[in-house]
Length: 154
Image 1 (cartoon, rainbow, N blue to C red):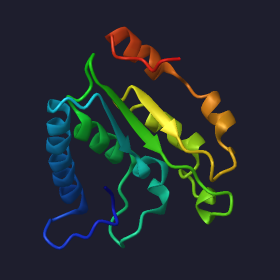
Image 2: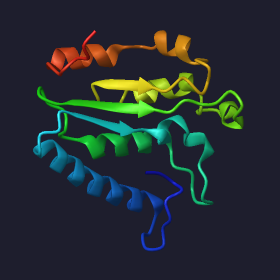
Image 3: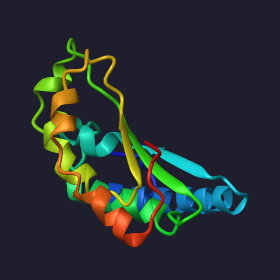
């Protein structure tokens, strides 16, 4: 959910994205209510915020952190795991030169997501961000442990 979504009816892209977030949240709550034990959300906006398209005002990375957290609000509990997945960047892609499209720039924002686990796809980048991910600040993991949230097996 992001800036490229067409908007012919809302006063702003922000208003459209907030309504989409609310609709997705209702669907996710239904999945949780049906007993879904693990929910994983794709998170392209924080990682790729610098390459927004669509001609409108650029939406800040903080906006997308808020949208993600609003979408998943109430989904984390002791019986359910919640994750975010971040796609990798190809070494051949010109996206890698963008200021926040690099994983190192996105990590402080990804760490603000209200999830138990963040997974990173690193195959298409030949693992170029593995070292950065390994050195990341893992305070979020400690925060979830203190709240009694489920932790990944390991």
